[in-house]
Length: 350
Image 1 (tube, rainbow, N blue to C red):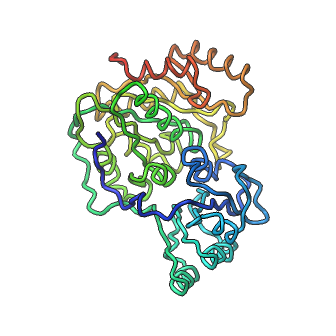
Image 2 (image 1 turned 180 degrees about the vertical axis):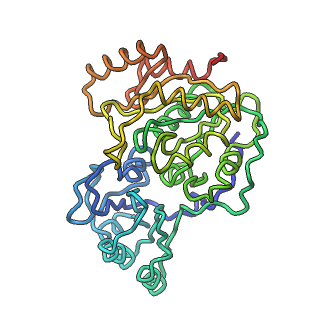
């Protein structure tokens, strides 16, 4: 049975289905909200819409807001998470076009829809809603550091936008398929839109971020698992603080390290080399034992989307042999993913 957590979002109140807005995005990694909704909430997406200069597509039908409204859409979701979470002026006419076509707007950016005067005026005049999901719940406590009952798994990344959310969702689904009581705990705007609840960790005031992570995964039955969506990277030059607060507040019994094969530079920071998987495991365990001395790494989730099947299987096997841990691509599944799930659920030692 799912344990309730504070959330400013009620999925049943969101206007659905959605038209996904891709803005002027040219980097697929920045369109992770759109791809996440396509992959995990496909039945709630009617199509996509974008600026003329966009070079990214979800593969869904391209529809104008008016066409999407005729197809049953009730809202347009900003499907982009660009650096800094800004909504550029060039997007505003297209967002107003959606409002004029009868669609509400849903945003998860750091820049709030409700804080943009032309959108606010248009929404008021047209009787439409501006819904910002990147608003944390009120009254988040400072972290206590006290141990909680139940089991927790946290996905930890070598970088941003490489599979932490997908891994957590896939593991939650696999746990449930085995009859295990498990909940996916969302910590970012896309996960919140998919799950219908959660806390946007990067919008929480820093002093309360670890407390938010504690609140996100409260006391639970001894057999229950909370599978917590990781954020950022402990080695990230900008976002490491969010990742550390999430690690300390989650107090994970198990971590799964996520990496994209072939990525060797921090996304958006090409002058920073990516840490190795080995260094990421060591750093996460060294920091994680502060709030859970028994935390352990069960294995690695390796994003092999850029490889063909044969090459991917060879890379997964070679990486597992090198690390001495299960390594799988959750989207490919198979025996490797089964081994990773087994390792997550095993009662082992560090």
